[in-house]
Amino acid sequence: MFRPTLSLVACATLVASLGANTLQLEPITITSNAIESNELQAPYAAEIYTAEDIKKSHAQNIYSFLNENTSLVTSSGYGNSFSQKLDIHGYGIGDGYQNIVVTLNGRRLNNIDMTAQLLGSIPVNTIDRIEILKGAGSAVYGDGANAAVINVITKEGNHNELGFYSGNYHTLGQSLYLSSSKDRFSYALHLDHSDTDGVRVVDTNSNRDQQKSTDGGGEFSYRPTDKLEVRAGAQFTRNDSIYGRPMTLAEYKSNPAQEGSAGYGSTRQSFKSNVLNSGLIYTLNENTSIEATGSREIKQLNYITYGSIANYRYDEFRTQINYDSTQFKAATGVNGTRGKREGYGNETSKDNNALYGTIEYHADKHTVSAGGRHEKVSYEYLASSAASSQNNSLNGYEAGYVYQLSPDQSVFAHYAHAYQAPDIDRFFNWGGTFNGFIQPMKSDTYTLGYNFITPENKLKISTFYTNLDNEIYYHAATYTNTNIDQSHKYGIDIFDQWLISERFNITANYNYVQAIIDHEQESGDDYSGKKLPGVSKHNAKATLSYLPNTHTTFSLTQLYRSSAYAQEDFSNSFSQKQDAYYSTNLSATYAKDNYEIFAKINNLFDQSNGIWINNDEIYPVDFTATFTAGLKFIF
Image (cartoon, rainbow, N blue to C red; front, side, top):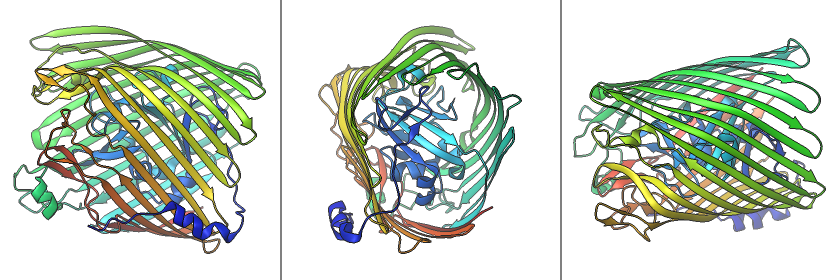
């Protein structure tokens, strides 16, 4: 089969002589980690993507942007593209998302069960920036911040946008974003809708994997005095998704768009969420401020096919004191989350309460940082025939050092001790039987990195090593959730953005990772020395952009992930492995005055891609070419 690739060396060689670029790159300030730091002075590895980066990608949702442009891997969870899973640094596409904390304007999107974070509820046209803190954040964000923290910050200011797009498979989308900041009052409103008839047949009636989503909301802020700002907001999400079941390898190779001979049929799932949030910031003096935030989310997950409904309530609060001077910065606070699920014949809750603090000292070319967190996690399980509870006390801490070699270069070292308290689904066997509480996971991550940022080039290189105790996994042979005794991971991340000339620029992201099980024996199975399944050793992405004039841009993107063991293959012995992932994407944009016209083709060469769970248990994803074209008005 033809495998198209994009040679970075060849592209660079062809265009290197075309002259200097008038565009400028510069260090971006990281705003979401309690203490603000720019990229050159941050004592940890970080990726920052701006609204302009997202706009140029023409991604129709945040999952597409993350998968095409960042070091993250995203993939639909068992066929549901609205509830995609995330992975970074070798935790696996199956459970990696539980080792990543995701926030939206500071509000956690992580769930208390095995439902993945619903990033799809965030319309891409509302995003101001995405900040990815790799191997850091355990002091401020706590539970789950082992691999990374992803912070999504939405836009503010004066910006109005109306957009439309359509594509094959009867794909349609509409979006509206309105914002204004005037005197002491500001607001931002958004409404986004998308639907598609789907690309795969999912049952004997020739129905397809239809997807429909509507998201909306508003954020408001008011400054009654120069020292006080109050905020309030509301958001809603409505998703309806139909997706197919797995197929055999022969069926996948024959036609990944078919239902499959197993005759499992389709699954229909709906999701409803309503969120209210509020907060304030009070400035005590030029160095000190206090901020407090709170939110409540009421949501429902309905597996319509099976008549299975779960209702959730999430409450979150955070109070933080900030101190910021020329050389010394500090933040300390308390935060908590209360999560409860009613459904599946029981009522189960997970509550987190924490005290944390972090400091940073800057002197000449040196920056040092340290932070710590103490968190109590409480569980309660209540069913008609039984009741159980458990408490865990967990500690996270981290330290970092940065040395600035020159105005445009720095090196850093970072250490983080992090943890993951089990989600409530981990306490149940297949079929819903309560199997008891399991141990939290703990990790120690060491990172070394180098940053080089000039007006023409932004280069970031980091290497990491993580040692883990009690990594949580599902033992398929006995249908139980349990712990891996000892495991480790290591790898390297390379990011480069090069403005080669006024007409050409290139962005590349490469990640190498190894995830090894050191010691684990479960019910007669010995996984010691095996590789963690669902982890690709190589992950590469590159985009070459050509700007023939000031209004027009053409971009070519190549994605590649190497093969991996199927998600349940902890013994590394299955006859089938996860295939390598390939996709070539092409986009074109014409922007002038207050409008923009764009077109994009994903998977230009119809590469077949899928997710392997077991032998002959394959979920096809991104297996055919899709195209969209649209129009945006800015007013």
